[in-house]
Length: 235
Length: 241
Image 1 (cartoon, each protein chain N blue to C red):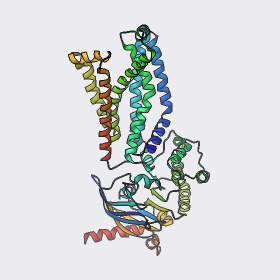
Image 2 (cartoon, each protein chain N blue to C red):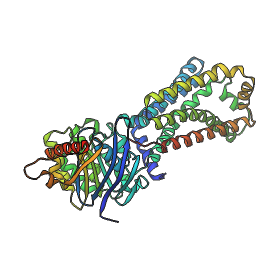
Image 3 (cartoon, rainbow over the protein chains, first blue to last red):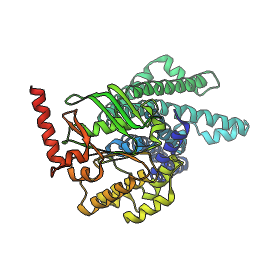
Image 4 (cartoon, rainbow over the protein chains, first blue to last red):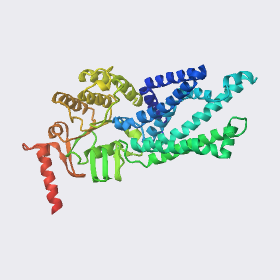
């Protein structure tokens, strides 16, 4: 893999999508403001934040990843001094980077889903500012890590298959499995309920979960690169 | 480094309903090779294999003395590619594309790019989505030529162009042949090939059925198309026998 080629390709994708990224970030800021403003607008803010995360994920997948073949720009990219692996890694990295700012802002709004008044609790618990910052950092790592895990599967499917149909099939399967897992199954499995509670405490559950998310993303990337290496056509 | 820009030995590629089979082809440095064949004959597949856009199932591919695809980055640094089925980003300007290509090619010649902009009557601040097909082909040619490639690979560069734009493109390709630059281009227009190529390769149904100098094929009042038809018929008779 050539780091310079990858960084140039990442810059290209970010440059092409800069206007939508600004708009998604603005929408995420509005979502946080609405969620923080009080009970009357909280659900609107949280819904908007979730929509920003879903919309941005689709936008990144359909545009820079699947759009290259559909718009016939892939031969132009592949004619540059790059290898297919450079292009695949750049697509993955640019997708994560493009999600990072609006995604992090939108994830902030989700904090207001908590039954606890998080800001009031922070003000009254007497911990240092550094401790709170670490807490927020871990929260973002947990939420964005979970997103990255699911999104990596979708991205890998899109990059390897370059097919809208296969990508939608993977999204549908994930929604079925993850959706049912979270909403139907998890609340009835005692150890999972206990484990989710543990995530909010100072125990090992949080770092273990973040570590598992990171390992999962790494495994998906490795499988994607292996599959990409078996491809014989890049136009 | 020998005198060959491209060496193909026993190159094959199999698809469900089409196969390119056993292609042996050498292109000497500084020569222009016109690849002639019907639609679907395998011209694009052959050029894509040379560019590393498609991997051959069989055989060996060497471009500018390096093995493709093992050394594809190094090879592509010396190659300009324009294809009929290639597009630029509709929402980005020509200047944006020029900056992108320049960032990949240290040898990018800004003065040459400016001269081509002028000759092609292109505006660098115009978005690709607002350009006609002819302007887009000229823009792609500009991006390929301003990197000063040693080898130009052009897949049907004049397809779908109006006569005036086609002549502009052919004139520029003729000029681009200076500096001992090697050109490989595909076309099903015999007059384009006769005007540009030193050598001609005929491809039919996935096989290289003829190879020789353009002047020999097109001599004696015979056009490249007529020579192609004769070679195809001869090849069919040869196979039947």
